[in-house]
Amino acid sequence: MRRIWGWVDERLQISPILAAFLDRRVPAQVGWAHVLGSATLLFLVVQVATGIVLSLTYVPSPDAAYESILYIDQTPLGGLVRGIHHWSAGLLVILIGLHTLRVFIWAAYRYPRELTWVAGALLFFVVLAFAFTGYLLPWDQKAYWATVVGTNIAGSVPFFGKNMVELLRGGPQLGAVTLARFYGVHIWVLPAALFLLVGFHLFAVLRQGIAASPRHRPLVAAIPGESRRDRYQREYSAEKAVGHPFWRALLKDAIFSGVLLMIVFALAIFLGAPLEPKANPNAVGYAPRPEWYFLSLFQMLWYFTGPFESLLIFGFFGAGALLFLLVPFIDRSREVLPQRRPIAMAFAGAVVVGVVGLTVIGATSSPAGVATVPPIPGMTAQQLEGLKVYNAEGCSSCHAVRGIGGNSGPDLSRAGFRWEADTIRTQIVTPQDVKMPAFDGLTARQLDDLVAFLTSMK
Amino acid sequence: MTHQPGPDDLSRRALFVKALAAIGGVFAAAVAVPVIGFGTAPFWRAKGDLRLISRAVTPALRATGWASAGNLADFTVGEPRLVTLSREVVDGWVKGEDRVACYVVRSGDAAAVAFDHHCTHLGCPLAWSGGAKRFLCPCHGGAFDVTGAVVAGPPPRPMLTYETRVENGEVMIGSLQAES
Image 1 (cartoon, rainbow over the protein chains, first blue to last red):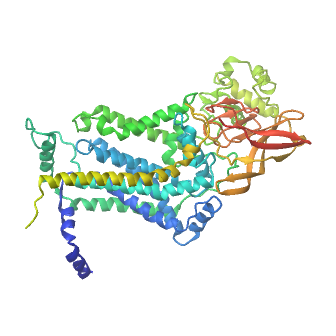
Image 2: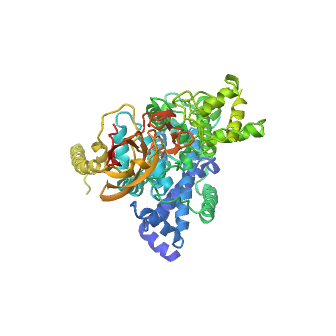
Image 3: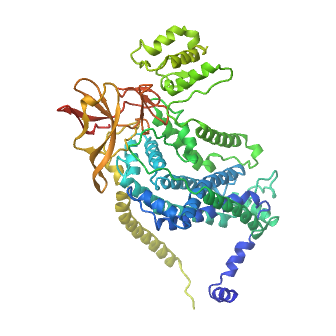
């Protein structure tokens, strides 16, 4: 082995390059905080490798996609590879998010690293696009219906909404053309973008060195009349002088990535990659749910309603994406310490709380279309039975109770205060309002319970 | 003896680089026009008026021709039923029969309406709830009444319908009514 390496190295002169790479000095704090970027890189490579072997068996066609996935899962190691691909995808979204957050907190996007941030932000979008195009491919129920919703959301662009939907679907309907398109984008277009952007991102990191962490007091004093470049150069040289060689930081990267790799393998082995029944465009009663990393966006749609909904969605996501991309050009202050950037930190905090909060709400809310009214303490047994009838009959689709439910019928939160029990009973069985269907199929017992529940609302 | 580049050489080099860049640009454009044009063809092909506010596009296969949903007498007035019919469809290069579902509601002695079963908000599959007498959307709480009108939630417009006619007592389902 040594001799082969010696033979190659003698001809190509690689070891000086390697030594320069490993021995280059980096700022002293480079260590645990920097393991997120290298782990992101590792899992991108894992995705490329597992994706390539999956493509050897997968067929992107509605009549064969699902079956080819079943075949992969039955093939030795096939399920493992698909599991790794699935879990790494989710992990990548987390990793790239945390990496971005770390860079933001340290203000590492400041001069001269603005473009590194922009490339990183674009990479974030590329990873989300990978996820979006990737989970249609198994052609199971989740894949199909999440893509129905996802492509319609993408169509919220003003004026060209329908064109955008058809661009994504390859036509108005979601079918063979869509699957082929998503596959092509997933394995050719996005990887091309990935390679270019990762290449640029890494080139920039190597060329400019890893950003030093914020200091209360810069290592060098400013010289009047000095150019920004010279000042930066002196400061970074001083950081490197008190720093350490790059290879010393690598062990931490390896430990962190190794732990994550073990977690992904464990998930892939014990849980595998989920697969729902084959896509059925004629299904009713199926509640589409996106993958968890899109849940916060999906949940947000609850709050964007009204005639201008699609403009709100487009405006919000469009402005958010632009803001994210242009962070280095918007935040032009010279402060680097987080405690001296209260607005930026509050903003980052709000985004994190918002995303995590919406994801939790989305994950825990009932998937059924009709909102379910939860019981509250202090209800009698009969009132609880009535609540069950209320939820089972779909009353929430028109009426709201304690803020849960539709608005086409009167709010029932104070039904017991507004109406007598008999009025309520009559209204349920023989409604005066034509919009309200008669619920005359209830048993006397059910009706009593329901009325007991409604009159308790005061 | 090495040749030192003089000012003449440098300006020639600059000219050369510019010319090469121009030639390269022409090559790139020549390839990019058909590549990007073909890749984005569905965008340019999309029919429909320019709308400030977008609307969900039904994902269902577009069926052509007419298909029977059964005898009108078998339907109860005001009780929608999901029927899945074998229809002539075109899905890209795949032409042939496929199953396409719709809700059929008898609306009178000699009339029926057929609804597309996708919510007009984002396209989730609507389920008829006999208890509430509503089409309910499982995604964001949209609800439609038996006439397809929006009664709750975010959907911006009524349910889409299929052409229908009653022939010899049979309910015939045609194509999806225009979406725009």
